[in-house]
Amino acid sequence: MATLYSGRFSIEPDAEVFGHGRSLPVDRRLIEDDITGSVAWARALARAGVLSEADAHAIVGGLEAIRLAVRGTPSLIIDATDEDVHSFVERELVARLGDTGKRLHTGRSRNEQVSVDFRLYLLRRIPVVQQALAGLIEALLHQAELAGRAVMPSYTHLRRAQPVLVAHVCLSHASAFRRDIERFDTARAEADAMPLGSGAIAGTAYDIDVDWLAETLGFSRVVANSIDASGDRDFVATFLYACAMAMVHISRLAEDVIILSSEEFGFFEIHDSVATGSSLMPQKKNPDPLELVRGKAGKAIGTLTGWLTTLKGLPLGYNKDLQEDKALAFDAEDSLIGCASVTATAVRTLTLRPDVARQAASGLLLATEVADYLVGRGLPFRTAHEVSGRISRELYAAGRDFSSLSLEDWQRYHEAFDAGIFRAITPEAAVEARLTPQSTNPAQVARALAAMREWLAARELEVRSTK
Ligand code: ARG
Picture 1 (cartoon, protein in one colour):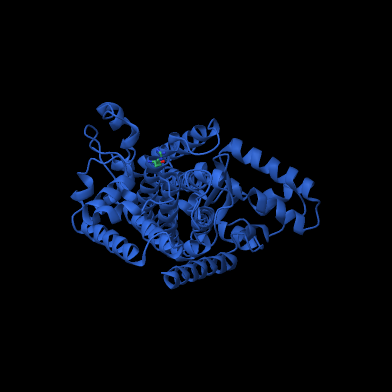
Picture 2: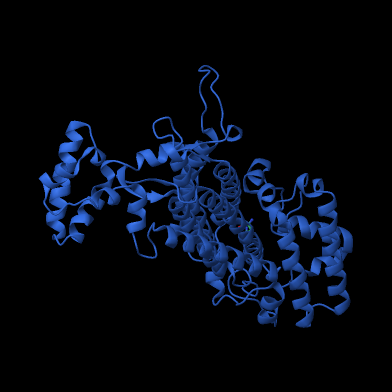
């Protein structure tokens, strides 16, 4: 296989070593972006007077013909033996145009070419990743709406804390995914810098209008320094971080669903279509798909760590180590989109068991309500906490809860208790008593749900209008 640099060598590269450095099986995914970048480069060369209009016209036509040929017959690139996607395109172009095709690479390096390709790729793929996360939010909002005013316990230290609306829990996970979507906006903004004109490292010797190139390719700015640009893959690290963070959130959601649908909790039932069975134990219904999501989150974190480790020792400028970025990023992207989609299905098909959840949200976790009740009757909070703590301790030891106390019992603990206490110690009263906008108060949760829906709809409109 002829390389782009065969003139320098009198012999063929060692076959195994060449295979070791070959990236076409991975970077062929950049074919559309590589062609888009080359089309713009050919035009920029013509604008600079380096290429004749006729040559530029032929090259653009040839590149678009390659684009269509690969779209129609993917095996063309899948079966190709070229070193990388750039070599593939150039060989195809020369095969079509002869010497004219050989003029395309004037003033350009693969170092900047791969950077522009990958940046273009991320600019168009990040919205797809965000769409997958939006699907997850959608599923959570659906569950929040189905749950209505149903209550469940919230947990700190995985011990029952206070009653909350099931919808509040759904919105809690949705809030994290909203941050993830916004984090991907940041990742996209970082990828949004046009590197062409950097040459291999020192810049290009031709009078290329880089602002025109940026605008033509849909970038909002041009990189500031050619050396930095040739070795800068920070935008890949930022993308991998956004992927890892989102995977961590999906993993935590998966974990919640796994725990809360277990026999021990039983607040939710996962749908049979997202469960697996056991080859040995006939009764089993396992949440394998969600466990796998949790497992893949570990890999996403490893991918980010691995990439940062690759970067940390590199001398300035381009180094071949950087080629590893694409395999990592493509895998992180595929994994995230797949996990978001599967988890959305698992969430959308959950069935709430409101009675079980409410039962668990009753009892001693209402101790804060007891304390707040005494505060309402004029006691200092620390004293009220002491009283409620003592009642809780004694009831716990006796295996009972607040509902077993008569008014006389209450008043034996403190004379400030009156019959109003019976209305205060239900899960419904507890959620109603929370007042702040971010709280589990049903009116606030309804407002938060509507706000999340509005945000999602506004984003979708925005995405559609930029397409
Ligand atoms: N395949 C390379 C990469 O992904 C493209 C740049 C190659 N440049 C070079 N001088 N070998 O980073």
